[in-house]
Image 1 (spheres, rainbow, N blue to C red):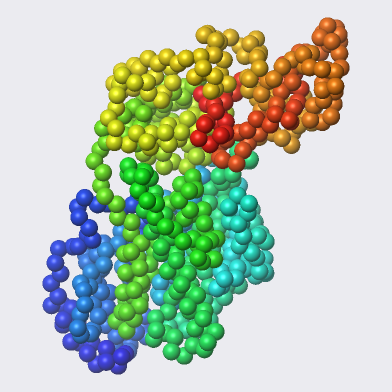
Image 2 (image 1 turned 180 degrees about the horizontal axis):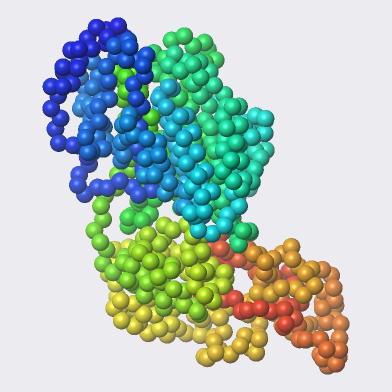
Length: 619
């Protein structure tokens, strides 16, 4: 076949020159757009000197000023149009720095702020995947260490290799590790080491050390082809939120090179099995990337009742390792960039076409939705002005600054913001506590979840909005009244005017407070440097045999004796502990502690959520 191409190269060039392309095919009607959660790109490498010297022509042709690629094969008959469209196209002259600036660089602050960013590079062996990823990793290291990112983070790196169904730690002498799911369904890389880095040189040293241990083998197209998937994971931990379970994650993934049938003619049985495993994992990866993008699009495009896309992430070790990237039930916000690396030589036109078709299938095209009519109870219908008005009215005391939380975002855009970034923006407002920021984020997200059942229903200004008392919207002030029984779904004091009285002067059963033990004996139970407890009764109201969670007798004197000894009043309280769902809490009634008034720092408002059976902080 190669000799046939060389013999007819001049005729092929004349036919390509005579080709008159039609208007760019956008692969869909004008009423559709690409999903904002995934960007699919193609990078065409330059022709190699060996390919040029042997007389092979170029088979991949880029249309100027478009994202369309024409793939011309030398065969008869011709089936289908030779046109493929992706989101971004980079030709042989494009520098890796350009790819980084437009595609990958936005993933860094996204992950830094608590989101999950993922880069995949795939393609035929010898198409430049490892070259591309290695250069992108250097740019990522520069961005992380140049001081341009806001705030401080502890950066940890781990790099593993997936060869078939086996995983190895490339930063621990290539020791075998296990990919397991824990009791909560979270995938863990059991046995993989994490290394903290503080400078660019150390980070790049780890990346280079891992590359030297990666499994390679000679193929027909490449003398040192990567025969495994390499996953570089960077984790960003906010030192101000050490107990958070939503650290930012950035994955840089160099996938194993796929091989066409002509590349495998001299493989033995083991190499054929290896090639099948690689191609199978890439096929499952395609289904997972596209399925997650469609699921996210359905979630924010007003189709909550549509049957969710099936995402087979358990069918491959690769996708199982990255389960939280693909799992549609995950609350983590994910952004994905795919770089399809392509060999332009006509001799490899079949493999190149398959690579580009694969990329085209990854594009999750969704219908354009008309601007929804404003509804004060549906955040996805809010523009920036309406969102800022809601923030100002419903964010508690002191009010969170809308210009700091959502300077330009609309309601849907703020919903896509990672939780840590949301909280960081809230805390920029002077006087706002971490508890208030967390409570407001939960309130905003809960309003979105509750509004899913209201999709398509017109706003009714005669009904109360979800904003609380005296909520103000773009259509005017909506006065709300709640019965006393409705108020008792929250730990807030139901008595009128209670908010103007210092909380230490109105302590009552059911009040939740943040506190710190003077002796420090409960430090192990603190959440972010604080403990939370629900007041049950004064210590002098309990029997003489009652003991706290440490076994210490609670009431060993009368109230009068305690006052004479200079002791402040104490209350028997139940510990309030974090629960399974992010931001949720449970009342641990049998973990009882005595909290003195001077140990109490602030009142914390909790609200019961009937759907999840958990308590959440509120404002």
